Length: 79
Image (cartoon, rainbow, N blue to C red; front, side, top):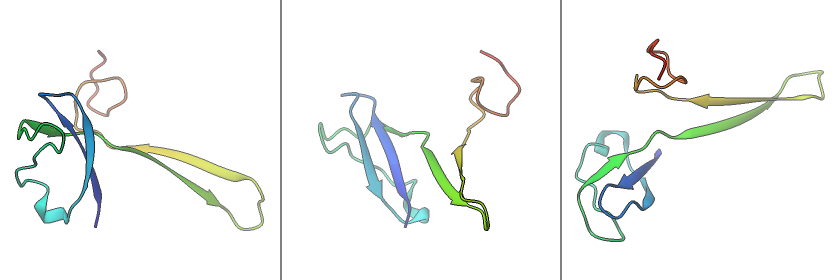
């Protein structure tokens, strides 16, 4: 079950929810101010792998993109 990050648009606090993938569109309530005015956030994560026979660790940072127009996404727009 994946962990999703949310941000409240009323109190500006951030929180996480462990939800099944088919429940991400349900109405989420901010645990701090009880507002339903929340938005799912872009999550960043990193993984480390070690290849066989090589003692060096390769670190990869992976981001997901919603085509937001920032310089980090694949939409081709540069803000």
